[in-house]
Image (spheres, protein in one colour):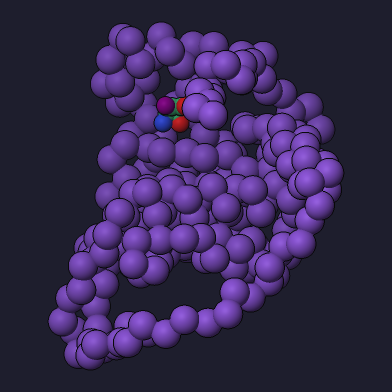
Length: 230
Ligand code: IYR
């Protein structure tokens, strides 16, 4: 994909120009906010299956994200295989047990109290898909020589945001999960050492009795998240 030789800059006329009136812009911005505010981090999943094509389209959307030097330093592993999901659950719960038994530290554990999480992660078995996000610290040309990637955490974060928004748009629920350390995922999923696992995203449909923590629905008011200089 990346040529080793110099690639000349070439300007293309902007494709897909948006032509919205001011009123349409405001309406679209409001509609998108309305859509995103209906996304909830759900911890109880049901076993309703999700077609692989839906997952692929959502990952395709994630792959359109901007990235440092357009190196697209991400790789997604989508897992529906029950044995692999179970292995991930067992390893993740082991890490989490250490965390909740005190490894996380008092302040962190206290911060999580209103979220109601614990070391049990049944959704890693139950959710029909787990998507593991990897960031690529460096890339490799076909002849094995390495090239640097830039702004990897930022780029992968943006792509993951696109993915979560795409999953939500497809009517799916997603839960981000970050056992620490996550190195076990390289071995389990046969990803190279050049890749760092950043997140496990459980994807599926919510259980009939799914809940969300009250505190998760309290969002900071506008004046706390935005300063305007006009
Ligand atoms: N990884 C743990 C702990 C955890 C940490 C944060 I920060 C959260 O927002 C939620 C949980 C777990 O998944 O339980």
